[in-house]
Image (tube, rainbow, N blue to C red; front, side, top):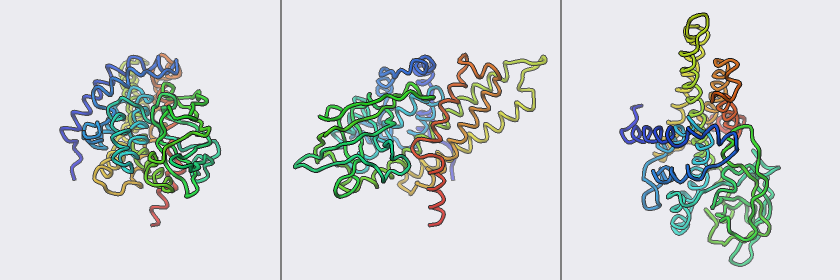
Length: 374
C-alpha cells in the first residue's frame, strides 16, 4: 500500500496551487463581497486544462484521473471555495453522467466542449418540495414525437445562469429520466438567483421549464433510468464536495497558523499558548484524516471499484471538519476573525454548505448505515 502521490499528481498539485494563488486568490474576497462570478477565471482554468482533467483527450480532456480532479478542487478551494465548486459541478455533476451514460454523439457534442472549457455545465435535481427525497420530484416530461416536453422547476442550481448545458431530471411515463438541456432550448429560462451565506461568487439559481422542448436523443442512460443516473452521479459529486471541504479547512488552518506565529500577547506569539497550539494540532489531524478519506474514494473511483460508501464517508467527515476547523480558526483570530479584514470569516461561511449540498450529513449517515447492513 503506497500513500505517496505520483509525480503526475504532485505536478498537478503544484500547478493548481500556483494558479490558484496567482489567478484566483487576489480577487476572492472582492468577488465574494460583490456576489460576482468571473468568467475570466473559468477561461483561464480552461487554458491550463483544469476543465477536463479526468476525461480522455478524445473528449477534450487531459486524460488524468479522479484523484487529480479532487486535488484540483481542493487546491482551488484553499483560496476560493466558490471557484472550487464551480469546477466540481461542471465536472462531477454535468460531465460525469454524459461520460458514463452518454452516447458517443452526446460525448462529442456536449462533453468535449465542456472539457475544453468552451461551455459550462450544471445539474438540476432538487425541487422546492423534493430535496433529499429526490424520488418525489414534480417536474414532468411528456413524449411528443421526437421531443419530450418538460414542465416544472428546479432550485439551488450551482452554475445556474452561467451554464450552457444542464443535466435535468424529470418524471416521464416510464419513470424518472435524465435529459441534456441546452440553455437555448425553447421553454427554458433562469429564475430566481439565491442570495447566500457562503460561496457567494458561485451563482445559484432556479431553472424553469415551460413546455421546454428536448429532443429524444438528449435522453441520458435510457428512458426511465434517471434515478440510477442521478444517484450514481451524486456518489462522484460527493468526492468533489469533500475535496472542496478539505480545501476550505486547509485554507483556514494555513491562515490561523500564520496569524498564531505573528500575533503576540503577553510578549509572546500566541502559538506559544498551549490552548492555541493544541487547537492547531487538532485541526491538522482532522484535515489529514479527511484528506485520506477523499483520496481513497477518488482512487477507488479511478480504479473502477465500488466507492459509494467511501464517498459518503469522505463527504461526512470532510464537511464536519471544514465547519469545525473554520470555527476554530475564527476563534484563534479572536475579534479580528469576525471581521472581513481576514479570510477566516469567509472560510467559515463557505464551510457550512459542505454539510448540506449533494446530500446532507444525515443522508450520508443513512447511505453509510444501509451499506453496513448489506
